[in-house]
Length: 470
Image (cartoon, rainbow, N blue to C red):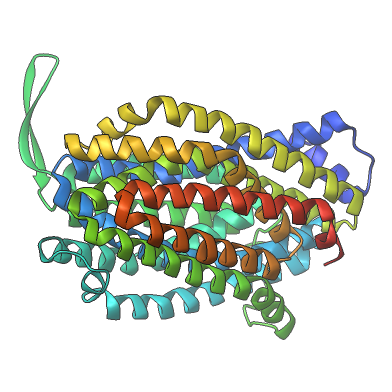
């Protein structure tokens, strides 16, 4: 049976065959492009929620923005749990050990559900007081609590989505997660259309239609995202556990009982990442606390600007995902020379892509903010801070993709420490110093400086090559 071009190139990695520079570039690009599409589609869901809710005014927008950093914290913990397992699968597939790769998949399904349910209980317990802890105004706290609660209740579906996507990427299948994540965005639009707004009359090609709607506002946005995530999680699991040639669990029976070695490996990879996510999101929550006293306009502008900027750096995360797969399979195949070449190519590609995205963001910042909200004050402030952040995108790309490289070899402790030191020592210190005088713009100047610093230290570690010995 003739293999597809991408699978043929991955097989060359696994079989120890020499690869030309052109083949390495082609494989990196073929894996990166679907991953970029997948990452952009995931952030588009936030963009859709924010822009639809933004049409309701600054208050509803601020209620989502207030708890957004905490939702990232819980999503980050889910991502860390999933990574602990799919990196192992990437190494095993690189060494052509599909039997143990399937065993890790079975164990990951059980552990991911246990973990997500435990985190879900914690999230539900804090959902009501959380907005008050973050310093939110009373007028937005109720909506913020309901939005966070619905997000938390959908966390098991999000966990399975992340796990299945990561497992498929570990096989080199970037296309299926990309297509299904685009579908998730479309479903989110449809659900939001009916759940956020009340019943209303709309005009289309000269005809009037009565469109039913639930009129749930912020709550409707959360429900729409939760329903879309659950539907796509089911599709991803079907693709992974039934259709995947490498990880099909139907044809070959096996135990779902957790083994000591798999658990130890998963904890070794996931624990530093999980601790990093907790402390980094703690830093982002501290940033929210710094921003909250600046008022509803600042909170809304900050929330919208973060969503718009995410469209700029998500391509970097796509390249990072491809780097994790390529490096993981190269390490599994014991090809250290190829590991370094894929790392080098991926980082340079990420910097190039995000440099272009930074230029686009600088030029289109007013237009992008105009899509997000009709509020003039929010639009103007958001555009100003986006143009500050545009200068950080190349170095931000370096840190994102280099981190993906380190994850691919299973080296998560030192990169996590570097991230934490950078955001706490540089960003928060500068933000606290600049916010009283320069407001929200001071906070984003601090963010820009910190991301440039972080990119530099990640490049230094990458080119010293000590991570290759992990």
